[in-house]
Length: 378
Ligand SMILES: [Zn+2]
Image (cartoon, rainbow, N blue to C red; front, side, top):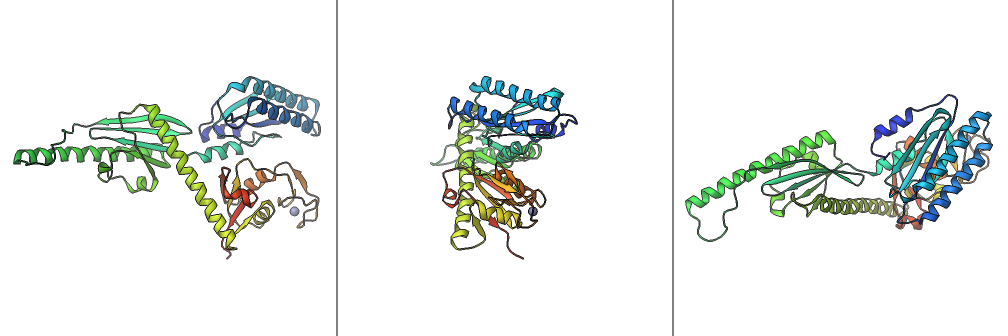
């Protein structure tokens, strides 16, 4: 299935087996960055690592056999899946319970395989958080059309055609009749915009747009009185018009979405770098970022996409470290973590800190690919 909404995650999170562990598998399959061969090599390495790991688990024969079957089936799926255009693959499997769910992802996940009591869905929720529900309003003199854009898919929502008389010629001498005609047309046009604005608000209430894109003539834009909730969400203007083919609307809207996101990422990095350079409320690099997370000082964690590093964590206080073998707080041995960045992201979520995934290259790369904006000290 395709990853589309939070309900899918909730359904996945409800699965639990008393008897068998669930295998969760995540594979980056972004063919714009990786060749098919590289993707298959990563898949093979993950499956091999999974086989090694399951041997160390305190499970009975049946429990191990179920995980082994999970991994075999996952490998077969990866081999078959090489033509998929999705940028990532997630699989949740517990063969002992006949449970299997493969999910195509619109964004690459971090490669990993893990065994747990239930499906590990956080990477999916992180991907969902990257996407905004975008409402698109296209208005012309007589027509208006609405679309929604979510995870790269454009869906038509509604359209409207109003009876607006044609424009009266501008310039030259205008008689009383022409002026009356002009006012008449203006009134119809005003009514058309009013309907369009109201419809946009109704659709917003039904679909909960995060962002709004509007396509219309410059002259019309100020006449369309959008609700202030919508103005708060207005992120940009499109050249597209109601009569344009959907693929043209999609292409332009995707470009704009990309620009808006890139601008937001740049803003976060800019704020972060400014704080670092003035010695303000920010830390950079994995070591200081983990310390800030442990001390619950993080307001926003910035992470370069796909950055990962090994580390350790304390099983008692859950503090995260780069290389401490013994927890300095509890004095007990720490446990090795394959990806401490991922643990850091989870800790940030627990502390209600924002997590900003930044696409490389960016200035964050010069600061250890991870950093944190800190809360004001009380
Ligand atoms: Zn500890």
